[in-house]
Amino acid sequence: MTAVDAPVQVGDDREPLTGAPGECLVLSCDFSLPTDPVSVSASRAIAGQTLDAWGFARGDALRETALLVLSELVTNSVRHAAALSPQVDIGLSLTDGELTVAVHDRHPHRPVPLPGPRADGDGGWGLRLVSDLAAGTGGAMAVRADRDGPGKTVAARLALGA
View: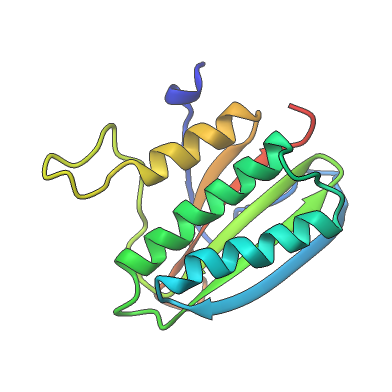
C-alpha cells in the first residue's frame, strides 16, 4: 500500500486515537487556543518548544512532519469550524512507539481526505497531506466524533523510527 492509498480511520467514541496496545504514554502536552488565524503559528511555536524539550532536534524529519501536520489541522479548524467552535484544543503525546498530534474543535462535521483539490482552487489538500504524511511514517490518521455532542478530534499518529 502506498501512502496515497492509506486508509483513514473514521471512528466513534470507543476507538482510541493514540497508542497501540501495550504502549505506555511517556509524555503529553495539551493546550487550547482561539479558533483564529494567529493560532496556526502560535500552535507551531508551542509544539516546537514542546518537541525541543522532548529531545526532537530541529530539522529532524519527524519533528518537521509533526509541525506540518499540526499546521494543517489547526488551519482546517480555523477555516471550517470557527463559527461553531471558539477554541481549538491541541494535544501532543509521545509513547515509546509514536508521536501523536491531535486537534479538536466543536464543529460536528467529520471530514475525510479528498482525492484532489477542490475545482474552485479553494483548498482540498490538507487532510490528504496529513493522511499521507502519517502513512509515510508507518502511522495513520483518524477522525473521531465527540462523546458529548457536536465536535470531533482529528489525530495523526506518526511512528517513531520510520
